[in-house]
Image (cartoon, rainbow, N blue to C red):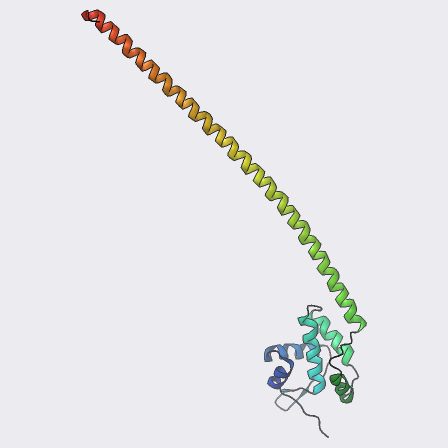
Amino acid sequence: MEERVYWTAEAADMVGIGTSTIRKYALALEAKGYNIQRNDKQQRAFTKKDIAALKRIVELTQAGVMTLDSAVNTVINEFAGENPSDELKNEDNADHKVYSTNDVAAILEHVKKQDERLDRIERFNRELINRLDEQTKYITESINKRDDQITSAIRELQDTKRLLATSTEEKAEHSKGFLSKLFGKK
């Protein structure tokens, strides 16, 4: 009995990604020696095994666990030597995920990298908070200093106005007294 094959668009629908992404993943698999059947027009004909391999790549890459290259290597190792009946058994047990040692190691490495990133982010945030505190302190001190200078300038201006007013009054009295003396008026 001949195995059913799926064309690129059908495979994309089954896997749940776009046709261009299917082609990209197929090229990556083929570059590592994975064989995908083709017809006379060189169109890819995906088997159930190929669909399962593509689904596994999507699973590994979308979870952020692995890069495409690592996921392709893992899939090739997992699917090397499998026959279609093994594939059907795996498809029946699709709800029960089994992770290889490579998967677990990749996940642990990913978690470790995320922890390191979080630590860097926390240090960066603390540094930013310290800088903001320093800037706030500087701005507050600058505003207070400016306010003190403005208050001092206003006081000096008021004192100068008072002195000018007093001086003007004294001059007016002084000149009044002189004219009075001159004309004999008091």
